[in-house]
Image (tube, rainbow, N blue to C red; front, side):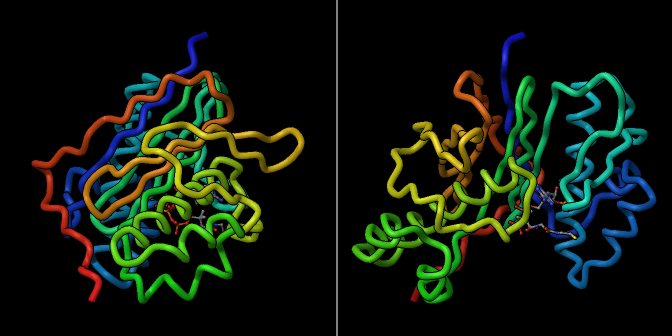
Length: 237
Ligand SMILES: CC(C)(COP(=O)(O)OP(=O)(O)OC[C@H]1O[C@@H](n2cnc3c(N)ncnc32)[C@H](O)[C@@H]1OP(=O)(O)O)[C@@H](O)C(=O)NCCC(=O)NCCS
């Protein structure tokens, strides 16, 4: 079987769409209603509805009927027989979501809107490995933010592919300054090695994709810019 993965970028609207909401299960609607901010509920609804449409197209099952469950660590999975070779993962940040579907392997995706340098500089000792911290210590402004979020999304993409939470030692993934879209190998244990690629899906955002082998053909489908205005991240003072 050919191994391939598709990552679809989705512009998130500030308010939910009725057609999207109609696709969600009762428990997803309950989750959506629990968000304090309307914009966060809208992000959840749009990302889940788009995930359902993409999985319906991949499996032939009905989008609204897809049995989407969460495992004990919160990772969503499809509780339907006959689709064991397919994996998926989603991420949202700011006004952008990324939905990855892999055939023949495990996938993790993470997208992050860049925060201000002031907001993230203090996090470096807690989350970055020694090589990453050394590279970051030489950078300022936008270059610092870009490097920080590229390193950060690589870590999260791997953690999300593994399916574990942030209790994973983030500093043990220490991969600074990777050329854009070039895949790197990241080891998380003797039997766990991941192929991770990082890119800028739009200005001010970083996206990483982790796959459990280096044989996947990866396609990133561009954002549908018609569906929403995507804000730029705030400028660093
Ligand atoms: C998974 C996690 C790293 C994502 O963090 P984030 O950057 O804030 O958010 P992202 O937008 O990138 O990802 C969120 C999405 O990842 C998926 N997800 C949730 N838990 C996940 C996990 N353990 N592994 C992989 N993906 C997960 C979901 O699709 C979620 O979106 P949804 O709830 O709208 O469907 C973080 O939520 C986490 O640490 N979760 C684990 C919590 C945990 O261990 N719980 C134990 C329960 S007892």
